[in-house]
Image (cartoon, rainbow, N blue to C red):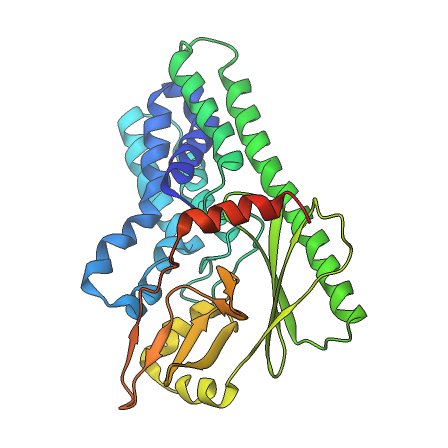
Length: 329
């Protein structure tokens, strides 16, 4: 999730336990703890784009890291304030572990069980930036900064902001399952046999969703708005060069990339070169009968490869298209 969301979530969860004891300082401590798991990005300049996928959201986002760091911070806090060690442990653990839990809700996913498992896990119920999630926590933190320490409404503000933000995540999960069921029924009705399906929210909302459908031959892609009036869906198909894909999975250095794609990697030829895309976010656009995706792996004739920073031509046009589409067909 974005940095602001992690900061205010860490601040609110720490304050839930420690606001009565230390007041506004609990917001500062929680904000710092809520940011710590993402400090793995400081290592990014030392690694290439593929290696970064192995570094980010790995051990710093695992439950074991949160437990270890909570034990250490609790020791320091209890020494500084001369109060219960366990209360400081729970405050620290909440601020730290809610960070990967929130990342778990995004399509990017997180490796919450690392190093026992290197797999990315994702619930796909909220986009990585969603104002309707963040706003409640941000308002709650601002109100706590304004209210005096002895104001009896402080705990109510914390609980309400956490309840509203968490409620939005639950709402997103419910809509996710609803849309998945819709896509599954449509695929069955259209006699499309598939191996698995992934349903993800589009940027900044939980109204318009994309379906990524894996088959033995390739992928079907479609979108669905909960405001749609039409009851049928047109699926766009992209053939997958599975032989080429499987041959590249044998390259050890590419393991982080394929691990990140969660099985939704698409290989195809473009302009005489082979491209592999991680399509778990869905296409950014479908232009001239071809789906477009971010950041492909490009393979040269000599066997070397590189990560391209491929970008759409016009973000403004895509955003306008997104707004128009989420209003329904």
